[in-house]
Image 1 (cartoon, rainbow, N blue to C red):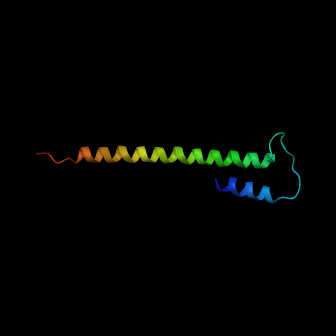
Image 2: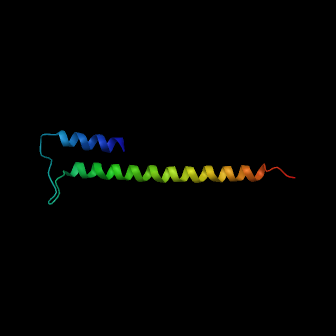
Image 3: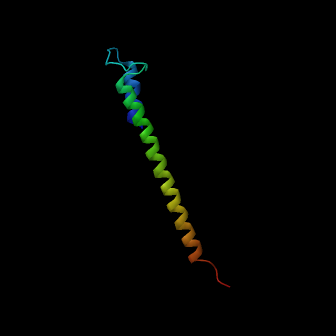
Length: 70
C-alpha cells in the first residue's frame, strides 16, 4: 500500500505527459497506483480477518481444554 501511495504522489508531481486515458483525469501510472493501493488494502483485510479467526479458535480450544471440572 505504501508503494502505491508513494507512486501516486510522485506521478502527481511529474511535469511530463505520460499519456492519459479518455474521460479520466489520471495517467495510466496513477490508475495502476490506485489499483495497487486497493489490492494492498484487500490483502491486509483478508490477512487480519484470518488472524482474528485463528486467535479465536485457539482461545476457544484453550478455554475448553482447561475448564475447571467440578
